[in-house]
Image (cartoon, rainbow, N blue to C red; front, top):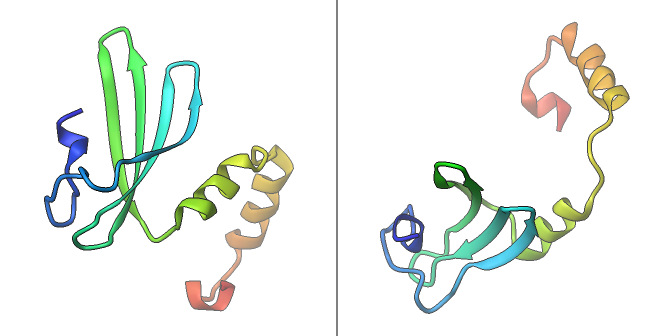
Length: 99
């Protein structure tokens, strides 16, 4: 827990703004942390395994409410994956053309 108790951008402790639990399920927890110093936000994924606790942090620009909305959404279906694949396999533009 000590490694995720610090902002990955500036190194400040998350003391004043505790990470907030976004989702918790069967030994897996997702936290959203905002640094009080540099205002960067991080998603922290934690899981309890037979070998101990594993955690991965990912800097994000999503606000806490956006993350909660995202996690409440349903799983991506097989048909949706195939639809995106079919669209992208012959696509010749850039990312800006998609957005």
